[in-house]
Amino acid sequence: MDENANVGAILLKLRFLAAKLDTDILEEWVRYEAEGYPNTADLPDYRTAHITYTGTFFNIARQLNNISIPSALVAQIAGDNWLELPIRESLPLIEDRLRKKSPEGHFGIDCSNLKLLLEDKIYPGMSIVDINSRIDIGAFNNIQHTVRAKTLNFTLQIEKQVPAVASIEVGARAFEMSADEQKSVKRLTQHIFYGDVTNINSSGDANSRVNVNSTDNSSNVAD
Image 1 (cartoon, rainbow, N blue to C red):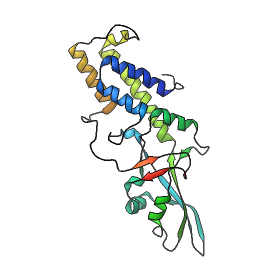
Image 2: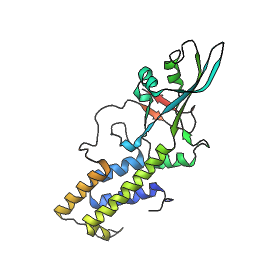
Image 3: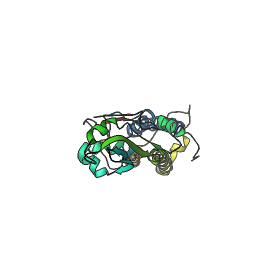
């Protein structure tokens, strides 16, 4: 419950609890959050961030600086994958990025490919000098907050439904549950960490791979 506590350390404790409860659902969620989500795994909604863009345009007569580029236009010309950022990085790495965030308080991705796609299609007759992206830092803070909230919710609910979990300790004897308690643990972990989703893995391929940094010119987007 300490807002200053490292979430990575919290996940280690939750991983221990998941092993004691013998719940694959919770162990998988903790592993993904601690180590990152592979491209074969569905991302939770809280791990998607919206990307906005501004551009500088030039011709022989004038220059337009820092002009907002409509998201609908980006989607129409370049595709929806340029508007939504899938954040698959591990939570410890996300926390490290937040500690090293830029003074402006936002992140960005490399826009060199997008510049080629939009050339002469935003303002016909004007060249694109530069395109900058913006991903608000709130998207990354939200991941931290959501993981904390889910963890707290789970520990409070599991103690109510299976009171014996309070006896779980490192080095203690094996923890045993009744059949009804095992069902309660499975149902609770499914509901809190995956909602109504019944198949938590996806066999489809990912649309994009994105590396994010605190500046616009050091990250990559690949179809």
